[in-house]
Each structure stands twice: as C-alpha cells, then as structure tokens.
Amino acid sequence: MITKKLFQFILIAIVALFIQVPTQAATCNKSYTLGFFNGVWNTFGEASEGASKLKDIIGPTYNNEPVKYEPFYNHTAPGYDVLGLQDVAETFIQRANEIDKSGQMGKRFEYFWEFLGSSEPTFLDKLSEFLPNAASLFDSVYTAITTKLVSIVSLFLSNPPTEADYAAHNARLDALATDGEKMMLVGHSQGNLFMNHAYDHILPVVTKDRVVAAHIAPASPTLRGDYVLANIDTVINLLRVQGITSVPANNLSLAFSKADVSGHTLIGTYLDGTRDGRGRVKTMIEGEMQKLKCSSQYKHFRWIGYLCPSKSDTDLEVGVYGSKVINAYGVTQEELVASDSKIRVPLNAQGECPIQGWDYRTQVSSYDKNGCMAYTFDDTSGGIHTLDYIAGQTYENAASCTQYKLSTGVYSTLKALE
Image (cartoon, rainbow, N blue to C red; front, side, top):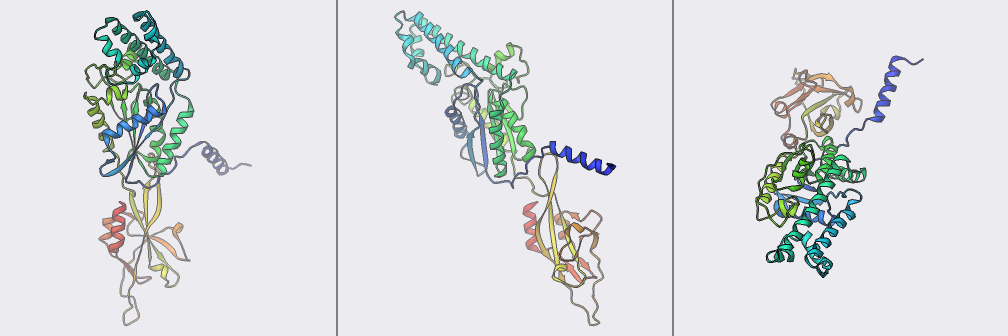
C-alpha cells in the first residue's frame, strides 16, 4: 500500500526529473567578454569583423579590466545565403546591360562586389556623376538588396531560428559563466533574436549582475537592454510598412549616406565614424557595461561553535559559513568561508571557570564533528548576523570555559567577501 508520505516522495522525484536547475556559476572574475550576434548575410569572417569594430570603439579594457571580444555567429535563413545574392546579382546584370548595350559592364563583377562591400565611393558612384543612367543601376541594386534584407528578417520573425545556433550559443555562455566572466551581449538586426534567447538562457545562472544586453537596429519585438535604431534604417522601417509594428521606435536621427543606402548595416551606418551613430553605440554599450559587477558574494554569515564531552581542540574552533545567492531565483548555498578560534580561559585559584557567559543558542546537528555538538552563537536569528555586528561582540561559554572575539585577520577576510 502506498502511504501518503511515499506518494509525496514519488511525486517530488518525478517532478525533479523534469525541472532543469540552472548550473551554478563560478566566482566572478575581473574581466569582461563582449559577445556580438551578427545580422543577415554575414559570413563568420564578417561577424568577426563586426566584433572587431566594436572593440575599436570600446577598447581592450573597461574600468581597468580586460575585455575580450568574440562573435556569436548565426546563419542567415536557409536558402537565402545563395538565392538572395543571386537575385541581387541578376538585378545588377539586367540594369547594367540596359546602361551598356555591349554587355561588358554586366560582366564586370568586381564592380558588383565593390558596390556591396565598400564604404568608400565606388566606381559606379563616380560614374553616376556624369552618366545619369548609372544612377538608376545604383538605385535598382540597392532596392533589390533592401527587399531581400526585409524578406529575410521577416522570415526570421515568423519562423524562429533552428536550435543548432541556439545550442552553440548556450554552450559558449555556459562556459563563460563557469569561467566567471561578466558578459556584455550585443546584437545587430536579426542577431537580436538570437541574443534575446541567449540572454534568457544565461540570466538564471549569473543574474543581472553578470550579464547585460544592448540592441543595434533591433528587428526583435522584445528587448533585453538599451537600443539604437536609426530613422534612415530602411529595413526596419519597411518591416513596419509590412505590418510588423512591434519593432521599437526610432531613437537616432542620421543623415543619408551612400556608404550604406539601406541605413541598416552595422559598419556602414551604425559604426560610421562620420555620423552620430558610432558615438551613440559606444555610449549605449558602456552604459550597459556599467551595470556589470562582481556582486556581494555572500548575503550573510553564520557562526558555528562546538560543545565537546570533554575539553578538546574542537571546542576551540569557530566555523564561519557564508550564504550566497547562486541564481536569479534567489536560491542560496551555504559554505565554509573562514575558520577562527576561541581561547581557553584559565581557571581561578579555586579551580573554577571565572566566566559566567553562555554563547550557545541553537543546536545544528548538520555541523557536528569529532563527537562534538555544533551550535549557533548569539540570538534567535539562527546564528545569522552581519559581520560588523559579530565584530562588536565578545562571546563566553562557562561550560567549556572559552571566550571568542572575532580576530582581525578573519574580519578582513570576511569583509572582502561581503
């Protein structure tokens, strides 16, 4: 027959199988990792370049602590990596052939790649100054590019990314958490969708003290931190036209530039040194990084003393246990953080203990050792006190004829852990 207690035990065991408890993070380090989540049509090399450009504005250190930069790469929607550029290339050929009936311009694909990748005035830019039809080529290709970008981002909003990139990002964040890193996550365009998922994964492990987020040109309907979105960002603006109204409001006004007609790319628009976007991105990221800290490791301390059947070295020991929060749910874990000692008070001439104090409060058998009974000091708070409170007390125990005063060395050790 299954008793009520047995049923409860089985139920708890079953529930435990399906509940994932966040992994405990290591002690916080004095260093940062800035993870960059790339936008659409980025190769891994381009995503790495994005991370490098962010390093150019933030620097190798922040608050005199080292900052490491790494890409958290995500792949563009399946089928768009090749077909997207193929369509744009076809637009280039068609419009080039209309301008140059010989068909030679349409074969000069170095102009096409220069057109897509350069932030400097290209040959076609210069050509359009004296050949009006070249300007129409310029407009057609960028219209094709923008249309493809919008369709890709729309696809991601309606069909969330596959688990493959999610799993890779989560594994890397778990490793950084274990290493004790403070994490600054930065997303651009569709990368914000991946970054939101990554942030939500790691937050319960390290809490808000050790992970923050910033969004550049967010296509995501929800935000995890501050954001920058330009008024000339054609991709995001067209998402609104398509009825995706949950994207954030524009909060950055920029002048149009041929460096990036879409107004959407990370390097061409938001990190363009000739306009205000670069400074705004720097201010935003540093504002979020200011929130990162190695928070107080321990919320409070518990002092444990011992009563032994006969006088022994154990009854002179004092264990100081610290309780720290190990995740965003407020779960605490207690561990021994320091050891101190009482002194044996000499007996008087009559062979009696000259003190009358009684520091014993509550027995806590889970701390018993060497045949001695463990107990908490002082009042009814379960032996949990602030450090400065204990430092101001003297504890005496007539039964063991011992006296305890927090030592200067242990005080300094604990003060560093608060």
